[in-house]
Length: 275
Ligand code: C2E
Ligand code: CA
Ligand code: CA
Ligand code: CA
View: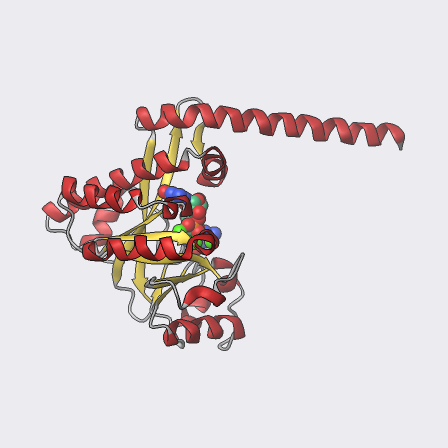
């Protein structure tokens, strides 16, 4: 028992060491990746629940690492958050999204809104407002073409500043979406004070949708309705989940059932042909 105990400790230490090394590797490689344009945005359609009309796309980052190959955002976004590199990475990805929006707009493509995930760290300084305004002028982005998605927990500490920032983006008609709603530190207490526009119901709630009335989803939907917020259900994987959502007030959805995140070239086909 003693030796197996030691074995466990040793194994644990090796795993930890490997994790730490990966962490350091990723930190070093992130900057290199930005400079060498190794990040690509994939686009996942967001559609109307009732009739599957595409209303926009969520941009999701993909890292083509020079030696490790594909690295999942779940492995490097948290590291970038820890090291603070997320600020630069987000700005780089916002620029990629802006280029894509400008290209599609110039081609007359009706892409709807492009939703970009950003860290709540940006909501701690008014610099972010200036950066988004600069992006709009540089790429001559159409009003209302961009939506920003943020997880709710990050806004709690800076309610006043977050409000100022969101208001500062209003002239550009940039919409704000709270991601993963219902998980983590729930926003109920201050939700009505934040000038956000959209709630995204976390996939974990959609996973459990197997009967017409689900008390949690119903509660989120009626909350959204009373605050006049649009709702997107994320992670719709089955016809059954979609059928249940059709019986609710939830207007928009996203998930593998209709489409996975895809390169811009494939998203273009969806824009012209629909889902
Ligand atoms: P998220 O923002 O909650 O994004 C949704 C994740 O669920 C994406 O994973 C998407 O590919 C996946 N997904 C969508 N529909 C389904 C479905 O029907 N079933 C299942 N099983 N999964 C589905 P992905 O692309 O691996 O991204 C993971 C997370 O990494 C994102 O979660 C987000 O928090 C973060 N992330 C991704 N791209 C970016 C980015 O450009 N910037 C930032 N700051 N974070 C990002
Ligand atoms: Ca998201
Ligand atoms: Ca989400
Ligand atoms: Ca989620």
